[in-house]
View 1: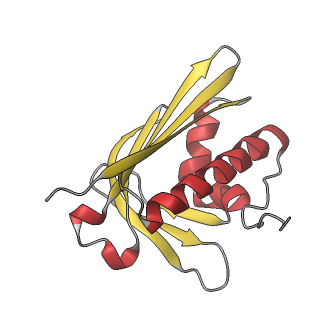
View 2 (view 1 turned 30 degrees about the horizontal axis):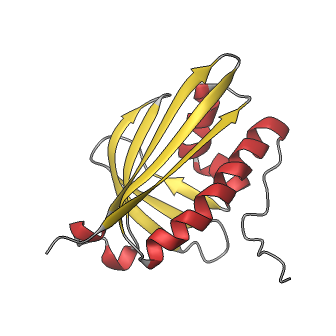
View 3 (view 1 turned 90 degrees about the horizontal axis):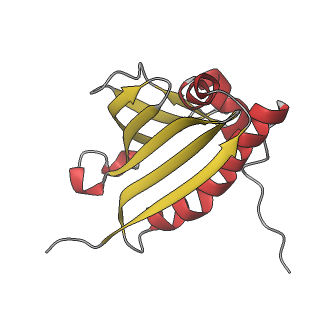
Amino acid sequence: MTKETTSFLYVTYILSTPEKVFEAITRPDVARRYWGHENVSDWRPGSKWEHVRADDKRTVQIVGKVVEASPPTRLVITWASPSKASDPASCSRVTFDIEEYENMVRLTVTHDELEADSGMANGVKKGWPVVLSSLKSFLETGRGLDVFAKPKAA
């Protein structure tokens, strides 16, 4: 039986360049400043990548492989929790499409092949909007958002 899958799509416009957006996603020292995590890899197709919490514990929270890297316009990676990474059926895929749009960048993030109604799918729907908003704020103002902030109770 085939599992039911879902996807998440997010498009944002950033006053920046494709090179700076690609760098913000792939350079650990930059990602740490708006994401609170570092994306660590050599970014060659077939290479592994790790999403590492940028704190004293340096916990690896997500792992995957680089599927495609075409700087500065496209990056495709697989995405899985470390405990499930050895099972290809547990891996989802993230595509970053970065294109010039007049004097800015249109960033389209597609996270697909997610198991429908899974914890990962639910986390992605909540996580990507705040991370990508923080990326936009960081590139436009030099300051990211608190991506670990929790909504206030009503």
